[in-house]
Image (cartoon, rainbow, N blue to C red):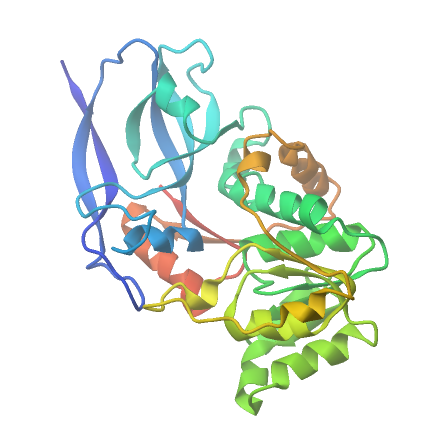
Length: 349
């Protein structure tokens, strides 16, 4: 029986604080059998994703930790190279949450236990990277968080923190097309200019410039930009003092969708966030956390159709930052935290 080479991203050592590096993630060489068992597919990876939530897999104290010597799991786009499953034909393309390997055999039972979505015929081959972006987890997160959690109304004001990232850019453009006034926070004048000039945000706030002025400045800038009635909605990706500042600027009936807290992901312990729940009583405000699962698996809505239509009619412009080869994955992952990327970070296999 012959075998085929594969390469897999493995956890080399835990990283409980600070920026992960090559000492924490390695690429292992291996093989898979060329013979498929019944009820399985062989998947050739085309694109791998690097996403902030994966940081918890490298923590020794996290419920989602992955032990050293085991494969990192994440989102990928893959083509079916061989199949003994009726549901998947050779040549089909799918998005899935799986071990990050260049080639792997996956049983039908394993596929049923994880998030998978069909990309065959949805987008041309040259744009299959969208399967880990606008047509993948970030797209499902944006659609679910905006339309089902925040439930925007035309004329309302939305603040998006970390607005130049994979999810933030999509949320902002979808909201703008829905008649919402959109404000984004980003790090640096260049990113703020990009939010307004390329992606149609109405306003952008440079959180780095605010931090250089001192405590309270970010809140002051948010309050001034939101206007007298305050924020109607916040799509929250950052946490810590950014969350606190946005919360204090929330107006009557304001809602916050908590998607992430990237400011704390590399900290040894999660910093406390200081807010007053009493603010929420007579203002009828709401804070709701969520994950993308119900939308990604199409149990709720059809984010694929929503995003495909928005891209087709030009209301959403997609931005991707590419890295080449599985060996570059750790560099791609680090870029999520050092501010050197815009939009979706994608590793081309």
